[in-house]
Length: 261
Image (cartoon, rainbow, N blue to C red; front, side, top):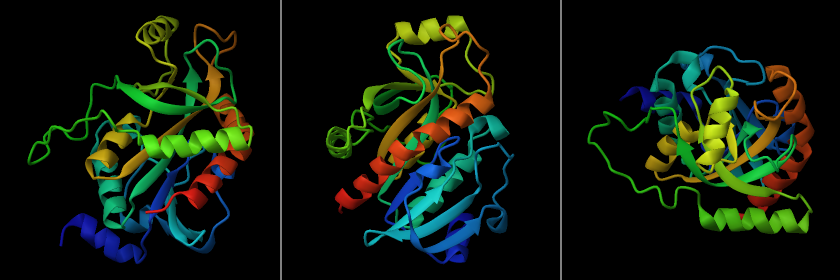
């Protein structure tokens, strides 16, 4: 029995859909029943603490579906991809078929402002990393449909019905932990990026490679370095994340009600 199987056996639960909450988005969690928590520490998953990120698996029921809520482990915490690979292999073994991801992001598109929520339909990976490198056997995966179009259509309908005013765009991931320079933001804008953060493209690649459907929203928590007058801080990110949580909660709850497998 390998490490993933041992951890799955220890968790003693399963899930249909997973939700990943970005920095400050804790209040976006749908109301779950029959809740079961398992900390990463109890499973031997090591990590560095980042404020705004709980480190546990939270299981619960919503609309006759078993839901798993968790926070990602960032590449900048360890400098390697082992924990990202491990998390999504565990989640796949738990039965998850779809992941609803959110990420706190900076606005690259000048028309976006803090507290805007952006549906992501494509991404640009600028980390110089890929969790599938050195995988055995090597797989060459087509990413044309990495963000599931049917799930995106459901989100768009919910946006109209509830007047959520969701935007659409392309997301880029850089490694962090430093925020982007004004020159980097200008470069990102030139190549068609709308939002940027220190996640979750690497997570998306790993999840999609394990045959899970992926949905991603970027919550704009700060203006980009060449737009905002004040320095970007993690405190600003957390504050604006909380302001978006009500909209995100409505979006996630309605999506969970309408998605069936």
